[in-house]
Length: 171
Image (cartoon, rainbow, N blue to C red; front, side, top):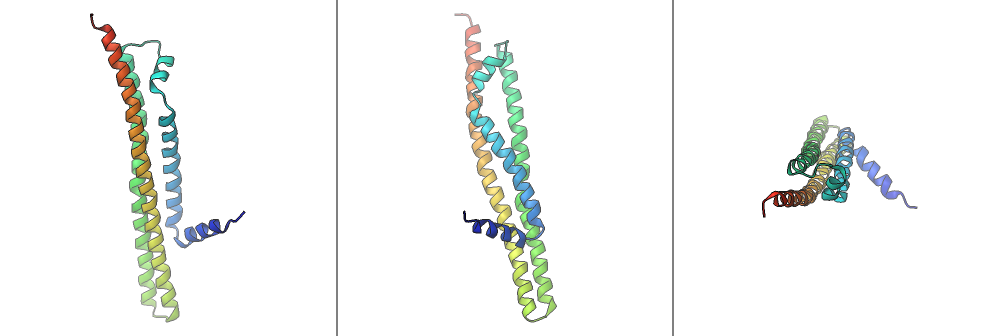
């Protein structure tokens, strides 16, 4: 089994400086949340769950179930969105740190060491920026997909609610 790609990834992470640790933690928290929420919403058959779990099949019970489910999904999406916004900001912090290292290298006036210091500072700046943006972009796509799936599940419950109201109307 060839693990050269893993060594390359690890070297890139290490070359990004201390901000990369924070970005890795943020990515873990974000994707754990988003993948779990995706699996939950994708597998959810809201209508069946409500019918199995609720003794009361009234309009109010359906509405309460919809509200509870909506609150659960919105809370998780809000948490994910906070992490999505934080990712490029952490990348920007890495950019600032890398540029400070670059300017320090320029100010050192040590010949060959200056070139290496400048290159290392620019590398940190670019790697952290790229990582922060990649984390945010993929997270954004996933949260939009989850929102779309959830809206279809909520529509199932709304249709059930309408059916319940129709049954109560006089013929």
